Length: 256
Image 1 (cartoon, rainbow, N blue to C red):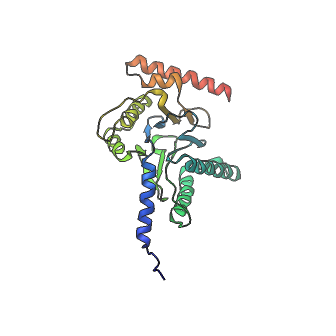
Image 2: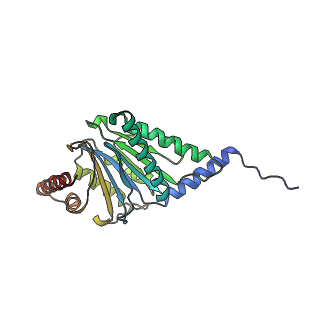
Image 3: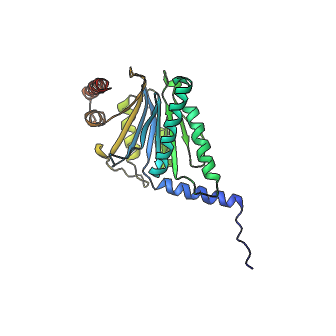
């Protein structure tokens, strides 16, 4: 009779963590940064159908790196939780902190369960406040832990290198154009330190904008507005970008 193969619990958990980290690292990186008027999400995403960033509720946004089908299931679950809580209690009772706790419980349960593999995902849940001091950003790794972030955060791919780059250059009170430019510069850096160009059509950009008059603060930045913000120029470029934003916001308001 053969002796059963024994693996210590510590080694088993370490193996599961390594499996999840390798899966997440295979995905493209994304960054989330605070700017003067809110929070911006930026990532390289050649797909126009599969989004890395989504709206969860009025002031709450969701970003994820890793396996799409796994984080999409989590996103849908988060939307259902937020809708139910907002309907049962009050819309103000739906918070990023509460949502992060729900995700942490789900990810932690899956990670510690021997019956299924760990999720190969890393999440960011962000909520824009009435002031920059009220902004909240939470990063949730594969094991369900919660990391309270401030200023900037990167997940997926070479996130550690990108985070170091952002920590050295990100400043409070940056404009949207400045934050977007910094995010693209960080994402453009390869692991060996060289830079590459990421065209606008390969970028996915969204913001939680506290200045929007609507209750819902999430907005995707695409097309002409994104091109304007990515241009390197003087004051006229910034003014044109603001004009485009006002025009596109007005158009979106008319459609809602």
